Amino acid sequence: MKRYKLIRMADCVDSKRRLKRKLASLMILSVLSAIAFFIFWQNHPDISYYLRLLEAGLSFLEENPWALIAVMATLPGLGFPSSPVLVLFGVVIAPHYGMPAAVVLAIAAQTLCSIWTFALSSGPLKGLLLRYVLRGRTLPEMSEHNAVRLGLILRLTPGIPYALQNILLGILGMRFRDYLLVSIPTTSLWTACFVITGGAIFKGQLGWAITGLVILIVVILATRMWSRKNPADVR
Image 1: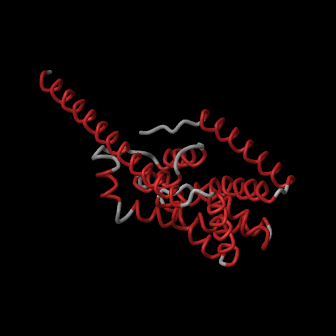
Image 2: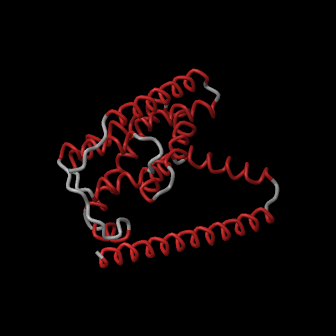
Image 3: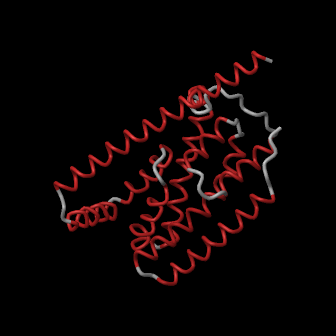
């Protein structure tokens, strides 16, 4: 009993130390970011400078749409938010190739990103991720059916980072076929919503904007209802 209490106390102390280290790291990063932003703003205080940068970036992407596809296929897997990139598909690609083509290209790029992140997290990087992400915790044993249900919940629940979803599904050992069946339809819904809505709003296309917003609201409500009625059983 005493040994158990000592172990609990040691775990509590370790948890507090980890929390302090994380808070300290976050504060240092925040201070450095604030200093960098201040220095950058002092050098370029005119907001027109940033508008010109934005226009130059959009012009480059319009002339080189492959660059946007490459960004979508790589950066979200490294933790970069995918929503702004998806919006750019509607802003940059839709006016030249049409909204359906923009949606298809965005889905294809995100699918490629899902594949390589899953391949790394379930293969060569699995041991490293288990060590540093899960910190040596034992993974629960899950049946194939429950793994698919958990995958659907992760994919359909708003707010869970895309890269984290891929990593978790990879280290849980979900079969690749099941991973694709879970990932492609669900991520395609979110992708289509952001591409249609974002592109239409920036271009002033009211019809497309309303369509995208309605689809987005319906998807969010439906996924929340589904997640509540279908909790994943871990056994």
